[in-house]
Image 1 (cartoon, rainbow, N blue to C red):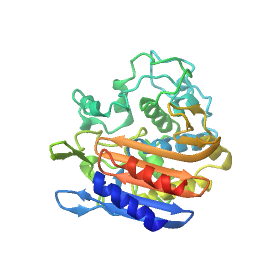
Image 2: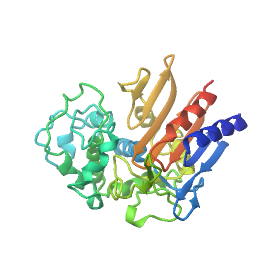
Image 3: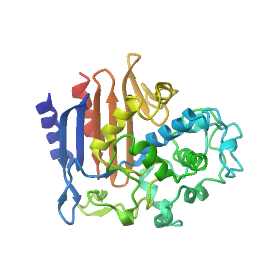
Image 4: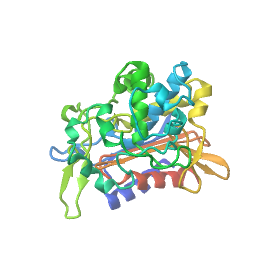
Length: 340
């Protein structure tokens, strides 16, 4: 199986020029660990399994775990209303929006950009430069005074602004900066020793730059395409080993008790995919009424990321790429092998 996976991935890499790192574990055993491409193209510094990669929206899971921790501690409930737990004015928002609605992308609030229109993402920073986006409150002017997108609870619509709001709630309830809370209560507890919410103008060693490739062969980094510091809707940096540690800690109830771990992993709402559901910060895919996988993913200019846990085989996969595309094809190839 190991050689088959490596051969298949090598074939994809030759075709797609995949750049990044891949880790496949079954229980505690490493099945495959591979790296391709450069963390820094100009200096020809190669990617390795110890390289830190941006994972974009993949870290909505961290935000959801944090909220569940605060619920477990009795500081919130999933039915707590937004207006009762955050001292921020949203003049056009429905008064019935709850924590549950925000976690499951069913709140109906406006977004500051549509995730599926990634090609237009850089237009956000024309009027509000990305180098000013260092705190969660900096995002509020982008959506705070806009009308609702649809009625609360009406349907699932993937939404980044809702997770910005959740991050602000975490800050107000915990009295800690969002990134500090995550690093203290999730990264440290999960032995994610290389992970963090790093700023683009202060990146630590072993951090991959994200690359945007143009059809004519030219490229640029993504440092002017994204907020200078990630937050509760995305933007943390992790290694493939750290991400695998996160799955282990979550699934062994080291971050939440059994009750709240199960709440986080419950398929609450059907997504736009035939067999797709969403829990709290995690995507869930079913097959024949059984859960095939719990997974997270993230895409930004210069970032593509997929990671999953397959309960039937106790397999964890982590695919981090410092290019805008590539992680999906690798994930599908691995999944085809481990699920058949």
